[in-house]
Structure formats: structure tokens, C-alpha cells
Length: 219
Image 1: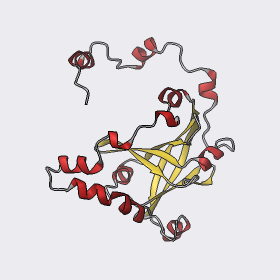
Image 2: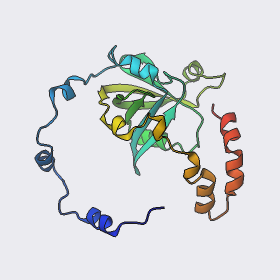
Image 3: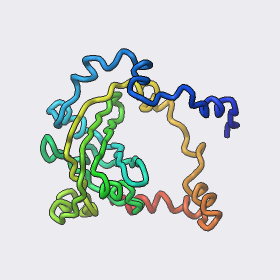
Image 4: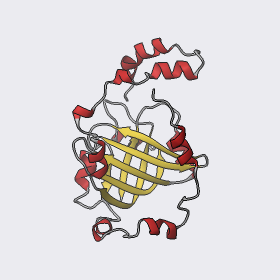
């Protein structure tokens, strides 16, 4: 693990140049958004944006609640977020860790954002809107996989949709297999749990059973 840099920490602690207003931001970002940044925004799922959602096997869900913001990874087969119509998306809430952070947030604040990602594609798709949580049996059964229905479905009303350019993906080399790292170079889930639980959880046992447990409980 790299040693902390006290000089960097001191620079980060300096608040004298913080940008705290629209005017301050515009002094730094003086050019403003270009025509292309504005022209790409729709208030619905345009037919040209539909294929991105249908091809995406992964999305990041952002919500806001009384305790702050939260982001949650969501993934399944391509098109797992279904398009009910051009103003409505359906996101099944598949089996997870039961923290229900996102759902608890939505009970307090319906605002939601999604970032769709497609392996090998530099552009991402951003969707902003509002959501309600439906446990309607017929809807949940309609979105079942392998005979297992989600516990609930997020019914998302679309407010805006637009693509994000590929710069971030290109800078990160996210889809470049040569840049992928070995999982063993990072702390394992079991080690993290054992350490943070002060050894009340056996990390080695947790890691040994993890892959089989996840395979058996995907849905």
C-alpha cells in the first residue's frame, strides 16, 4: 500500500480556492457547453437511444435520501432495464444484500439517475427521472428470470436522456483487457469483513464459499 502524501493532503485541505457559486464555476469553465452538448438531450427515450438501453448489461443507479446520496451497481443480461414506452423504464430489483439503500432513498425522494454502460463501447447513456417502487405481482412476474421474480420493480418516469462522450472511458482504458488487473492483488471480501468485524466473521470461510453462494443466489 502506498504511503500517504502529507503534501497532497495539505493541498486538498486548502479551501481558499473552492468554487462555491455559478459565477465562480463559469470563471473556470468559461466556454460553457457547446451546441452538441445541448442538442443531444431528449425528454424521452428517442429511437436512437433505445438500442443503448437494450444493449446495456450494466447500469449505475443514483438516488438521494435523508442520509445523503447513494449509487448502486445494477446488472443482468443486455436489456435488463426494459422500455415500457418512450417515457417509462422498468428496472427489476433482483436479489441483493437486503440493505435496500436505494429503495429506502426513493421512499423519501423519487429523483433517480441511471448511467448505462456497454462493454466495448466508449459512449455511456445518462437517464434522469423519478421513480416509484412497485410490488405488483403481475409486473414482477412479467420480469422474472429463470422462474424467479424480482421482489419489486422500479417504474422510472424519464425526464431527460442523453449520451456521454467517450473521453472518460478512453482515459480509463476501461475495456482494454491489457489493463485489467488480477483480482488477487486487492483485498478479498472475506479479508475486509474479517477485519472490519474484528474477526467475528471468518474471512477465509467467507471467501471459500463466496463464488458458489453467489452462483446459487443470483436471482
